[in-house]
Image (cartoon, rainbow, N blue to C red; front, top):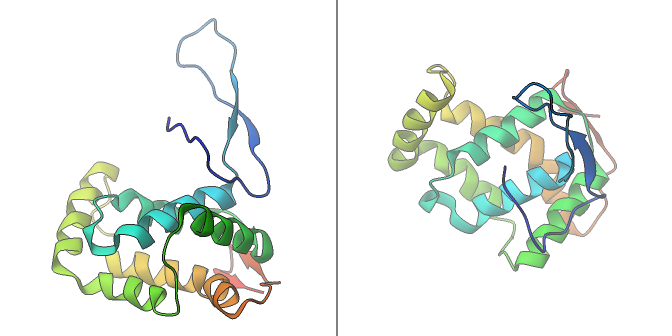
Length: 162
């Protein structure tokens, strides 16, 4: 469990129950990040470090969440925008291009191969992850840069914004 202090959570913290691993204990109720803020925090970490990051799980988590959950573009946009502003992270029109370039960085590919061993999946390519993240976040990033509202909805089953 990671503990976050001082982070902005959009739209709000969510109550979740976690099943204890020991019998005889009730499931504790814990306030957690929303999925939107989880993605925002992970994307912010990528933007801060790019090729210097060792946090390969951030890439995987954004990709995984986009494959499993639907998202409201406006809420996700607000989560990302408020997070990068709150943390003072540089974000501009070239940020997604720089993200895309990571798929060909030899050091990142090496880090990715090591990460795959931790999730027991040797077949998920880093370029597939980056393409998926870019597809998922492109309309959000464009809306932030252009100072417009993203009024689209992400369908995890279609892997597309509608």
